[in-house]
Image (cartoon, rainbow, N blue to C red):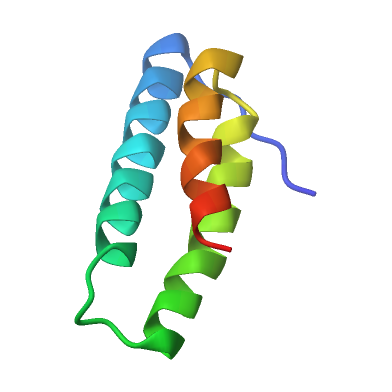
Amino acid sequence: MLGMMFTDKECKEFDYLLRKEMDEMLLDMSDRRLDGPVKEAISKRYKIIFRMYARIAPPRELSRYAMGLKSQR
């Protein structure tokens, strides 16, 4: 396990980066032009990013992205 310390500003930036990345992946998952293996790879990456986001996000924000996680199954 790796531990890191962030300042408040860095934590907000990290939060922003993770949210934007998940938004992009959800958009990609809804693209009908992508085939199964590509969507599966995006889904696996989404789960990793979501777990990272879950460590710093408030529950209300977390539920927004958890819905995206459920729709991928």
